[in-house]
Structure formats: C-alpha cells, structure tokens
Length: 335
Image 1 (tube, helix red, strand yellow):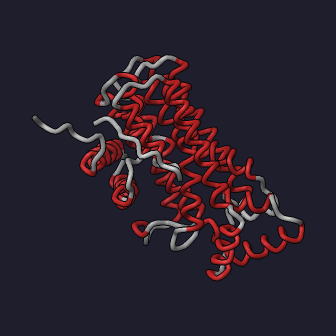
Image 2 (spheres, rainbow, N blue to C red):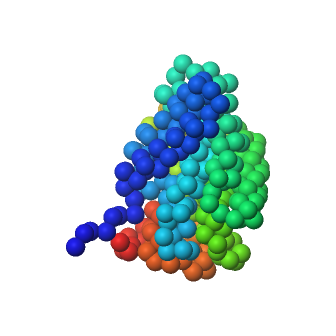
C-alpha cells in the first residue's frame, strides 16, 4: 500500500513558489520589471529552507480550504496571491528595519520599494480576479483583501509610531501586532474559507483563528529576535516589543529612566544589548511573554473549534497553532 503523501514538504513549497514566479513573470510588462520581480521572489527560497514548519502564507490557505471542503487542490491558485502578498509586506518590513537580505545587494532602495509596492498592490488582485469562482465570490475576495490591507496599514503605522517611545503599554503592543501580523493571517484564512464557500460564521471563525495565530507567531518571533538572534534588529531600531513594554510598565520613574537610557545605548552597543536581555530575563519577562503567546494560541484553537473544520486539515491547523506556543502539546496529527 502506498504511503500517504505528507501535507507539507520542501517539494510542495518549491512547487507553490514556482507557481508564484510564473504568474509574476507572465504578468510583467517588460524585461526590467520581470527581472526585478523574479529577484524578489527568488529571495523567498532561503526563507523557506530555514523554516522548520509550513509557511503560513502557503499552508494556511490550503489547510483552511481543505478544512471546509475536504480537499485543497482548488486552493492552489490562491496561494499565488497569498505568497506574493506576504513577500511584498515582508520586503517593506525589511526596508523599515534596515535589514535587507543579501540578494538585494546592488539594487537601489527605491527599486526595492517599487518591487514591494507592485507585489502588494497589483499582482494579488490579478491573481484573485482569475480564480475559478463565481463573480460574487471574486468581488467578496477583493473586498476581504482591501479591508485586510487597511487594517494592516493601521497596525504598521502604530508600530512605527512607538519606535523609540518613552511610554508604551503592553496592550498597545499587542494591539499593533494583532492589527499587522495577526490581520495578515486572518486575511489568508478568510480568503480561503470564502473561496471554499464557508458560511459567514465559519469565515469569521477562520479569520479569528488566523488573527490569533498570527499574533502569537509574531510575538514569539519578536521574542526570538530579542533573546536568541545573533543581532537583534528590534533593539537596533528601538522597537518596543512586548517584553520591553511589559518591563517598562512595571518600573518606577527612576527605573524607567535608567532602562530607557540602556535601550538607547542598545541601538549601537552589543554590551548594552546583553545588559537589556539580562535585565529582562531577571525580571521574569520571558515567562510573562510566553503566557501571553499561549493565550493567543488558545484563542486560535477555540476559533478553530467554532469553525467546525474537517479532518485531517483540523489536526494540521491545530499543529500549526501549537508550533507558535512556548508550551507545545506535541499532539498527533492525522496523516
């Protein structure tokens, strides 16, 4: 008997990336634009190789569609839109953080910005318009996309406003992450469930699941940047991530002033960055952050239960949520 093909593999990631590359190439207006977009998409390959779990921008649309319909093949064209959209957003983040990957070496920032804007503002909309779906469904997908992008823009604006801020609350940081990273996965889940013909209540439940999953994942990623990355771009940029906001909230006026001075030094000094990490760990911010991430994971699991997802996609989605937790359940998923 033939072994069932696992849901995710490096081969599947490559297949979906090639779909996105072909779409961008075919829609390009000239050779220069084609080359620029090809370079942008090529930069996804190192990311995919480094991920130890299925990339949500590819996996989530397939899993959500399968959770509604029991198969994922009709959702393959949707991953073109979500992959391209994710990449455009990721490039803008890299530009804002001053953390561009090496494959952009030799390109002007204005060119890179143009690539990102093109990936966000034109190609996903074209990909959605060409899906094999009724006109009213296509119209709903375009509306979902526009609403999601507006929410994400608001989240990004709030995130930029808090960089280097002397006063920022943990609630503000969570809200910003939910509006930006959380809304991105809410958008992917809503697009897939609406394409699959889910009820309004189910679409809302899948979107809620994606929002909580995206929020948990980004908070966990911010934690990794602060405590485990070789170079913390957040500390270098003065970004007020959750552990820092939690610590600032609990400081006296004198303690706040001293910690803000240390954060300012950490933008330039590795020794100051080590001091920040040591102080946060000693204050127990690691555990507090982990508990908040876990709360978002549980909200995602509750939303998944409300959606009434089918197996085996339900188990795969549950495992994807669990991957963001600091307290993994190590549950078995269906083949």
